[in-house]
Image (cartoon, rainbow, N blue to C red):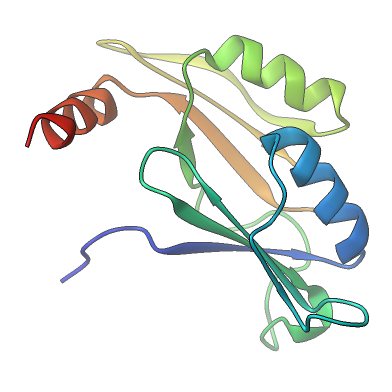
Amino acid sequence: MLRGLTTISFWADDLAAAKKWYTELLGIDPYFVRPESGPPGYIEFRIGDYQHELGLIDSKYAPEGLATGPAGAVVYWHVDNVNVTLERLLSMGAKQLEALQDRGEGFITASVVDPFGNILGIMYNPHYLEVLGATKKA
């Protein structure tokens, strides 16, 4: 049924600022921008070991009734060092939502709200590394 993450969409009132912020955070340029000329409405990055897609969308295209502030689910991205990543996010203007949490058995989480109001979760996840290792061997 649910086979894997394809695209995570974040909304931003100032899409140009969001593009700049995420380009700096990720260290890469987006691979997809639409429309190609004029102000963009959608920007997409491919990131991580599985090339998951992080889409930035102009808030004017948000579905009616969507929460305008942090709400709902937290999607956690695997990182090699949660503390270092959290400090970087905070130094770039993100606001801490959930402090560093040791969940036991090697799982560590934290989350922030980016400058555009989206929740960004980070996690050190031993299971992620096990799956990645098995995938690379296959």
